[in-house]
Image (cartoon, rainbow, N blue to C red; front, side):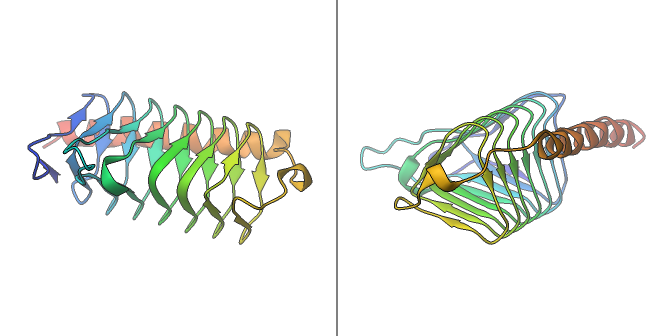
Length: 186
């Protein structure tokens, strides 16, 4: 469902993107080319800041937002998700938040008030809250990263992990093409 927010902002969705009919895209949302938004995802930019403004939620080209993902923003703050990234099933991305290019966010993970640099991998059930991850960092499953976390102790993404992330993007890009073809049948 594509709908306006109470401020009257309507999503802007590139014609090559695929939005599942059960997804909800609301308000000042910008979805770039070849993006996949899966079933029951919610992307909602509707809260105003103290001056009555809303920064957009922007989803970069060739990114996939998988089943049940929730992307929202507190008090009109921006959410930016880069290109060629994967936000896996039931993850929550809550602004203010910036996710770089080529990032993988695992199942049920939570991002809030953070920056996740290009090429990072945040595995399943992890939390990044109030921290900025430099490019290429690896966050293991169930890890909690906060402002006091010693980032020097964290590992870097391996080529194998990077290859996995890229394969997820390729798979979901193929889904965009396949579902777009199915839409043409009706």
